[in-house]
Length: 95
Image 1 (tube, rainbow, N blue to C red):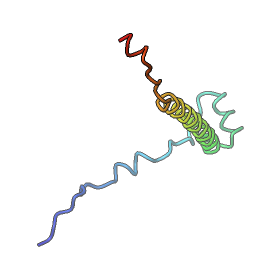
Image 2 (tube, helix red, strand yellow):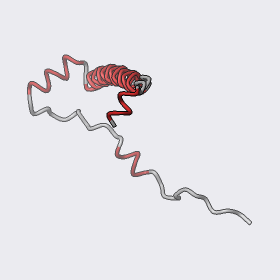
Image 3 (tube, rainbow, N blue to C red):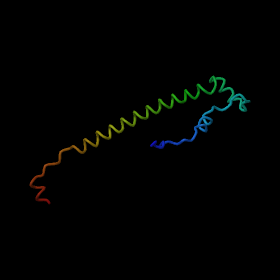
Image 4 (cartoon, rainbow, N blue to C red):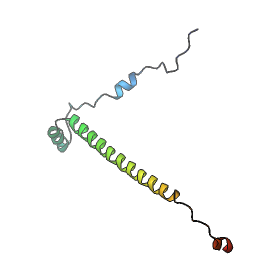
């Protein structure tokens, strides 16, 4: 007996049309936008440059978080591993 599939049988045509880049062949309304596109060589390089800058920033933030967590771990271990104070007879009498 054949088992039914656990995934959906729906088509993925809707996802393919959603990923299509916008048409930039029409007239650009803003001259500043047109100049930016011409200077950047089109929309591709500016997005890839932005993506690499964000990736570098994410790596920096990740390393800062790792260092902060390591410092917090070291501080908590140093406070929790201190040996308890020895009890003396005066402590017992004071209680």
